[in-house]
Image 1: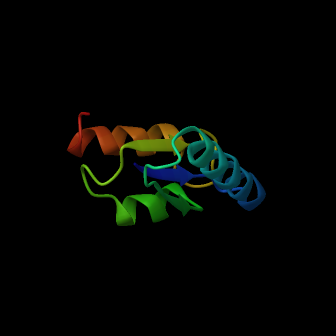
Image 2 (image 1 turned 90 degrees about the horizontal axis):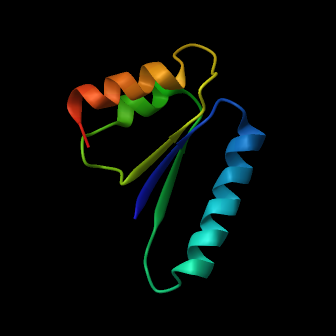
Length: 80
């Protein structure tokens, strides 16, 4: 499973990464997972490719481009 986390608050981003990784390892120990973390919506969109991630978790309120705006741009290239 490939997951993208997008949050402009580094402490929140790190904590979410830790919690999610621990939970996935515990619940699905034999499955591989990959979590990429991005500190801005713009940074995420620069690396975005349709189908690259199974799950994208966005902070709604970020400096610059918001999570809602990022979601709209994702939907333009990947309706799933």
